[in-house]
Length: 156
Image (cartoon, rainbow, N blue to C red; front, side, top):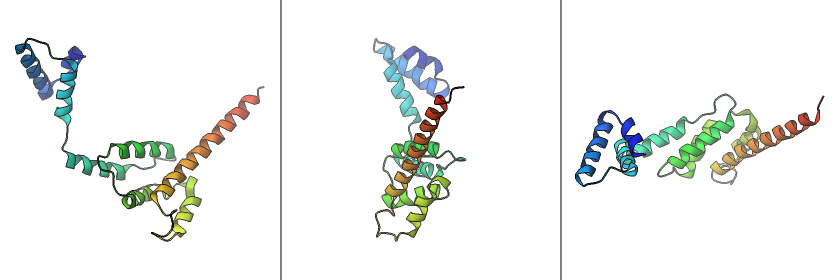
């Protein structure tokens, strides 16, 4: 690991790795792969405030591409999991609603959501919208599986 990481580290990062290797040699040992990995992580580390701002902006940029709601849901989960301090429920609800409100597969759920009064009904929430998309994905997967089973039985 150490040799491979030293080989690919170039520029300023390569200089930092070389410096680390020289310091290790002065101490009578070789630079370990884990030590190089720590140098790389520190080199690319951003400050916590920038992480929070960029990741909230990243969450807002997650959108449905074409009809790929499953890709959207996966990207949403990945970005949300990477946020150090997740946004509050109301902000999540607003961002998520804006992203999914025009998706045809959950239009009945969106119509139900839109009819509800804010702050009064539990279905007017991020949780309801998120579960609506998951229910849709489950129905589509089940239908696809049924279709594949049916097609496999129609052997000609």
